[in-house]
Length: 465
Image (cartoon, rainbow, N blue to C red; front, side, top):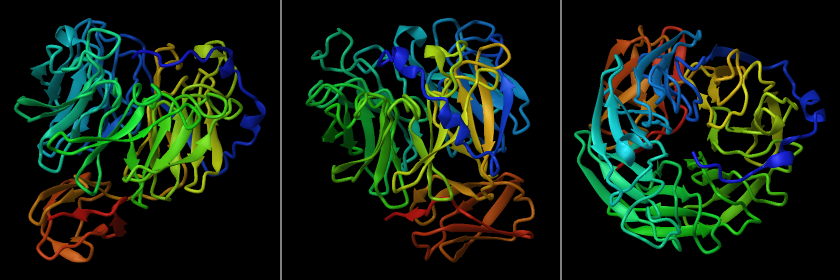
């Protein structure tokens, strides 16, 4: 990934911050350390599979030095599922679609990048190869839309020649699971350029995303795009409210969108912002170097209602990490109160670029680019004492639509309901239930009844028309 900003000496931050980290209610563990032969530099977050394990990619390393797809258990047992060829370089996170397969991208495979499918057993199929005119360098993760197709972005390429380089300003595309790609939009610079993150499909059915550059001031944008490819620029960053948003957006329980910019703000160290779907942006937090630098990966909202995020730099001074600091993990309340949870020290990982994942067991999982026993990056867990829950894939659908429910200890489940309406279901395993949106269901919480209690979904399931 192209470094968006040189942070230099700003990454040496105040060590007094580490003394404020309360460890009484949390447990941090390094689950596994990459050694190069099994992967190097996991830029992307891990995702939870239907089998209860976690899946991800490393951009480099592996037997062919072109990156890997891996599986890791909650206990830290790592399995390499696929080794890419040198020059492929997968960057964005995987997505597990409702057909059970994983889908992802390589940024340089066959020169321009590819879209691939991979099974849980590691059989990989290249679905599409970009040729430049339809995009190049798909850094962001794919998402599965409510229509069952996959949607994504490319960092360069497309129909416009308005950008500095001759590779285009980037695109938004749709691709079927059989590999038929439809370009939806080509950025032209003034409306944004170089989207480095994936899309979010909000409850209104539209997609939302960010561009890392371009817009009115050249510092990036937030945009909305319909399924038909009609794009609206919602906000152009001006530096004071952030610069170069490299991460995607989330939609919180209040209906607003939230995101981060890696840089900008009062001191240039990055921001957290809230933006309404109509486009009104509000600054939620500004990093100042003493409390973390560079929230590149974005944030998630956990089941306690708070946001959790990482900064790639800041924290304990350590020469074995980039820019002499190893990065941090934070909790942020919706009101904007920031609490430091963990400072990496290289031995337990370094430079966490990616967003966190909250697993259905309640704990958080993440990756670091560097550090660990071999300096090649790590996978870690962080427990904050939050309880288990269930997650639906997708999080919205019409009556009768197929839904997968992820969770833990689901084997003896006795009931499933959508906002109180009972649904028929099939227990596939201790971590997966298959069901359909029942007739009469309305938008609300999905609940799974088990012998030890009722598990609720982390977000409300949206019943669409």
